[in-house]
Image 1 (spheres, rainbow, N blue to C red):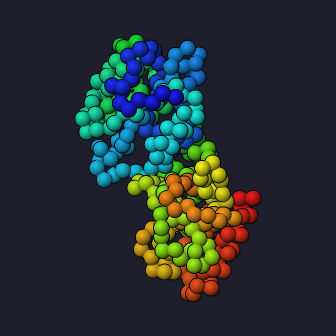
Image 2 (tube, rainbow, N blue to C red):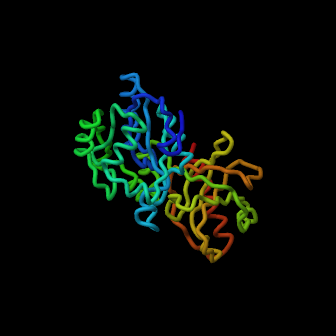
Image 3 (cartoon, rainbow, N blue to C red):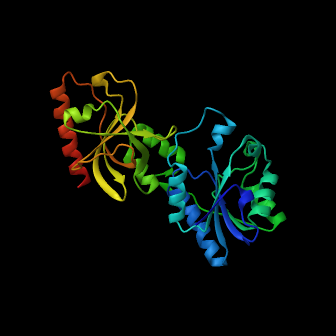
Length: 307
């Protein structure tokens, strides 16, 4: 998959393309349907398939301080999009100047001049341009003017709910990682670099990898989870604790992963944790033996759930 930073970087000899545009945070099942439709139409027509997305999240520029929790970091999002068979990914820097671009200017500059769009694929809730003034009706009208067609990809739903990034964030925030996985089509993943913590886990017999995560990463609700720790192509059963360690009067919220049957040093490594199942909420224990007893039970349950 080709990758371009900014639509100005698109090669002049690209030729006509089939394009879809969106933030695509999570690259969830709804996004997969839209991108999949784009790839299929491009193959049918013998054209390039192009996904246009933005960095940073538009909300952070339009409403500073309102950045939503991020389901997929930019590198992970690019990987997931590439797996769908896309020919090219164009990441547009979402700057204050770009946010002022009117709907018609956006279509002319990005879709027509840069990408030479023949077909544009979107869901019916697609909005574009300054103050999100453009909708599917205006896109179709501009397509008639500039010589491209607009195709609407059906939204994907499950149990009466349309899958959206907002819905998945709410699932993650509530600790319902199973519902999040159903909408994503895979477990929710959190990436991070392993840093030194208080090393209490090692003292208790359960050495944990303390993850320094992305500033806006979507972290599940406080509690204990069964999951997988991924490092260098290796996948390890993992009991994950999210929270502040109230037994030790902790204040800093952390993601700590205890990899079962692993004996090694992870410090400094960039790893990922896939959250599979919520086991319990965060508890405060009266003494260390009670904590160790519960942790032993948590690890046994993790092994059972993942087996």
